[in-house]
Image 1 (cartoon, rainbow, N blue to C red):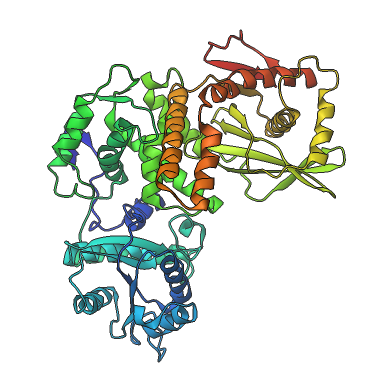
Image 2 (image 1 turned 135 degrees about the vertical axis):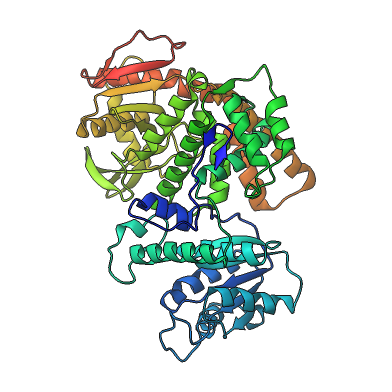
Length: 563
């Protein structure tokens, strides 16, 4: 499809796969554009499959306990292709698991007649329609099966808003299907078969057809949510986005496109983007809109994959919304004028797995303590995509050091954005006292030995990967204003809690957050500039091979180090 002078992917779902259809396009065809929007609904339809009944039932129990829905329709008869001659229906087998898990029987409805996805949906909708005229509902099935179900609803019940909740099995999911073999019932086999079914049913008109463009979803969310969130300074400072003619041609052509309806996009959203320029704010100039949105889309996909690997649960649509407004907190002094380069760097950082390790691994000793290291994804408000954490352990306990916020690019250059104390870290005073021996012979004791040891250990990890160049960037341009916003929000939340009353747990949480951020913007600025520079200087006292290679003034954009 031509979008002004731009061309996004014009491949349709109905077009048959061929030898050029690679894994990334198969992933887009089967999984693209489907994410949990986080909405709670009264009804949930669960699709049967004998091979994955336990996984799907477990997902139902988990989501029901989170109050995502109140009533459940379980689908699947005895004659479905996956039931393999079992005399008991898939629906009744799932019901047993749900009831044993504490879900009341009067919340469960059964469709024991259907033998395929289309009948699952039609029979479930008949059951629900006998109770009420439903406008929205949730569906639960395996992740590779969600799109077919969603597109069937879009074709047959277009006025029903559908929340898709995936039941993951660990081998046929978006982030792991490619890792399995080609044997029967492998994740790869199931996903490729599903892709062929999507093509077949789109050709037959049984499901809605669609363009295979993740970029389209990113543009829609950017226009509907990102611009509005940023202008309201929800948790990101106000800024301007300046698009050229190619960008406006793209937006205007999409607004009139019937397929461009996932979010509420219209002239109001475009007017907000065009007319809300604030001359006091930084302006991000977008010279190539297609490149801009393609890179943002790739960053979203890589971030979701990273979070998936490390295991924290997340709602994809919520994560995408947060990321699209918070990624700009990582902007350096010159990045606003070279946003393409900034996004390219972010992609390199996300894809670099040089140090990634979920399970702690032993990396050395300090006195009588063993030292372990692990990594984790950076928070979405972090300047970095990664954090490295060291822990000291002996027979008396364990002691966690401050976390290193870092990234590594394709050229093997490491960027250090902070050495940050975790307020919830395990602290052992007996072990911590041993660290003060690092102060011996040091005249200016302006940094804590916890941070000194953490950074020394981090530099040892860099050497182990033959990384010899380190850059400590200057303070990110939006950082100060961001912490001003956090401070104001914390003050407002505490005042509302004290005025209107709240639970003890809520008050303790709000008060803890207030104590952590209120009025701390100057301190945080110091920790991310002067203290970090002091730390680097301190390291040169312990290790003469660490060398600062540029003229150092705090107003400079960055500090360059050779190890």
